[in-house]
Image 1 (cartoon, helix red, strand yellow):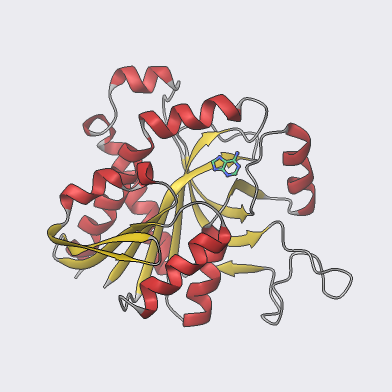
Image 2 (cartoon, helix red, strand yellow; image 1 turned 180 degrees about the horizontal axis):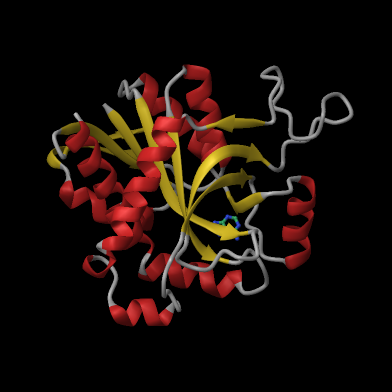
Length: 252
Ligand code: ADE
């Protein structure tokens, strides 16, 4: 069983109609959709935003539904200056940028785990990169020309890179700079990925985080983020996750 997560309804809603023999279950204020996607048993849920919401949902996926792997899909704000709206980051190292138990422990270190980040296994990053590339090849089936024009999406890129999660929506240039200064090289910022990665690490199952850039984590984010979420975030998640499952099925 594979768990598919997003933080917001818009990040998962287009996937629900693709699930066969779907059944719905409520637990802990979440709605879980269980069924079959490309011959694979899956359970789909939106976690709500933030690290606690994501961590409890991931834990429930593992304990109540018995998932053996989690794939998280959603949006992120760009930290790297070359990232554009519509580009996709596949998480390699997942940091928690608001974790700071210094001076007792080094900044960013996760207490007792003696690490500052969670690493995604190579098999998972390879699969995710391939799925995003295939989604880009077929992008016209998911995103209209008008939508591409609206967001100035021309030749979107996929990068394998580091992601920082924290319980904060970053919407000021100074804040973005401060995060980048503490964690140089991090590509983008979001609010759940590293929490899910921590739960998966602790339960010893693989986790994949795939994030589409919805905004530049600056003063424009207040406008760009809701526009992207309302318009095309669900199409990106739909296309990427479907390609991920198609390709997985081809390999079995
Ligand atoms: N997810 C998408 N954009 C974000 C931002 N600017 N800050 C935090 N999480 C985000």
